Image 1 (cartoon, rainbow, N blue to C red):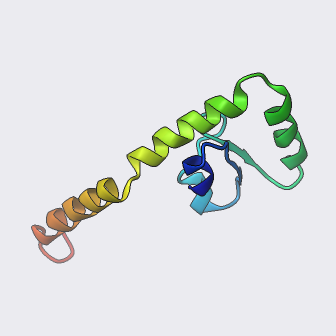
Image 2: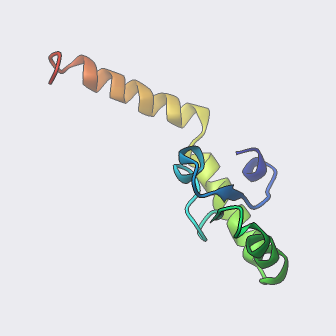
Length: 88
């Protein structure tokens, strides 16, 4: 999230659920494993516009996940669950 906030592209570990929940490969970042990391970094350095596109999409993702947005979504889930009977 800090990279997106700073306007930078994200390269993340594809085997970490924390990253795969946020990063969509080749849309708002690059998902890699250790063996693919050099190729991913090379892509950022050599493909025209890739880093800028990924960073821009990342910023949009960050805006969708603002504290206010996430708090409102969480409150709506809690309200929905409060209206359901236990186990329902």
